[in-house]
Each structure stands twice: as C-alpha cells, then as structure tokens.
Length: 345
Image 1 (cartoon, rainbow, N blue to C red):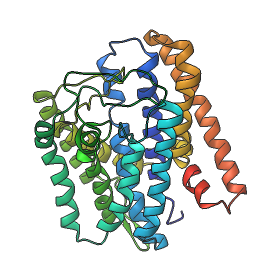
Image 2 (cartoon, helix red, strand yellow):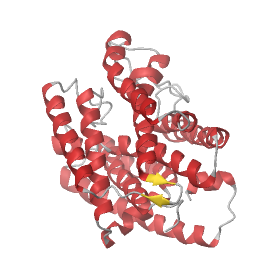
Image 3 (cartoon, rainbow, N blue to C red):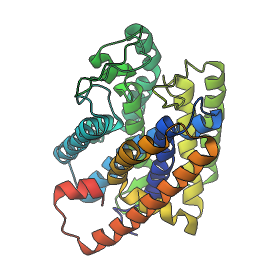
Image 4 (cartoon, rainbow, N blue to C red):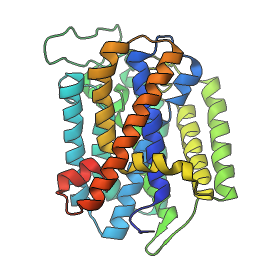
C-alpha cells in the first residue's frame, strides 16, 4: 500500500459522497415532510467529508513534504470550485451562502499551519470551536435561511430573523466556520495518531470502537435532550440546522465507529465506495449539476419509493463514472495541478 494512499480514507470519503447524494437529492425530489430516518441518514456526510479533508492535509504533509503554501494553492482551487457551484449550479452570487467547498477551501491552509503546533493544542482549538458555537449562535443569531442573492434577479428569500452574509460565514450559513472548521482540525489530530513517517496505525481496534460507541451514545442523548430547532432549509432537511454540541459529539463518535469497522476487515463491497472516494470533488460537483438541471426539473416532489429508485440510479451512474475516472487517471499520470485537485489523486 502506498503511504500516500490509505484505502480506508477513500472508502469513508466515498461513503460521505454516497450519503451526501441522498441528502442533496432529497431536498428537491422527495416530497416533504421527510421521514426522520431520511433526515438522519443525510446528516453525517458533511462532518465526515470535512474531517477527512483535514486528515489528508496531514498525510500529504507527512509523506510528500507539502507545506502551507501548497495547501493555500489547493484551498484556492477548491474555493474556485465553490464559486463555480454557486454561479453555474445555484445561480447565486459567490460566498453568500457558505457552501461546504468554501469551508474546506479555507480549512486546508489552516489545518496545514496547525500541523506545527503541539497535539494538545490542536485538540483544544478544535474543542473550543465546537463549544463556543452555541454562544455565537445566540449572540449573532441563526437565520432560518441564508440570504443568497440570485444572479438573474429572482427574489431573495426573506425571513423574519435574517442575518448578514458575514454572519453566514461565521455561524449560520450552510457550513460556517463555527463549528465546521473544528471537524477539519480533529482530522489533523486524528492523522497524527494514525500515521507515522513509515507506518500506519489501524483504528480497527476494540478501544477505538468503544470510544466511538460511547461518544456517539452520549452525544445522541445530549442531542435528544437539546435538539435545537432542526430546521429544514428549502427542502434540505439534514438535522444540523443549527448544529448543536450533541450533534457534533454524535458525529465524531459515528466517524470513529466507521473507522473501526472499515479498518477492522477489508471487504469487497467497499470497492464502489473506494472508487467514489478517489474522485470525490469531481463527483460532488457532478451530482449537484445533475440534480439541478436534469433530475429536479422532471421528478420533483416524488413519494419515497420513487425517490429511492432515482437515488439508486444516480448512484449507479456516479459509481460508473468513478471507475472510468480511475482508469483515466491510471493512464494519465502527468496531470496538471488543476486536474489533480479536481479529479483526485
């Protein structure tokens, strides 16, 4: 196994894409209100995706010697991808809603800089981001819907508790700095436990499993007691609007559980997930475009059974594209930097 390619990371990144597709498809295609299990199912792709981005900063820095400048350039390209998504797919002015790509683009150079601090400080910074989030939500407000400004003059969604675009970036956009940057920093901290210069430590152990299970159970209890508002934003019904401390704890616990399970025993059924994870950025952009321009205009407001069929068909198509991209990348090894970022690996 290449030190710079960890199969478990690809599998988990692919799982994030797998479930994220369902969450993003449900918004315009599944008739509301969405069942609770559908909302729960789509609620953990984002933290997994962001945490793995932080881990990959640490892995690339360790195995390839990349410094903050490299990750600043890579982050800038991901910010550019976020602009592309906003302008071409959502048809809104960039940076008004805080897409997940903006958060990841900002997190890469920050994560690279924090590789140089001592391990305890990394955990403290991440924990602080999580714990101060409720205070910031109360202080700055948490809008029902971000003020996205449309390019072609469509009316802006107006809500009674509207906040500013700056507030969206800090605390109440789709994926604001508080608390989501904390997941990337936890990824850096976990990477220090997982990878050494010439070895990899498995997370497929009983202690990791028990810690993950305990954190998930405790977080779920806290989340049940203090669930927050559990908003649905324009059909998007993940259970983290707003993200609460209980949600964050349960998400971190679930991620540790997934690491333990996937590391414990490689399985052939992980193959399609691994292929998805190898080209995650491209497939993220592609699935949003397909939903916005092909699927939603034809099949909006479907019952659960029809939604499930559309979801499976879309996944099958994306998996086929993922395997095709793997074959392309195997033949075209000297890709430009832009395409290495866009296509992965």
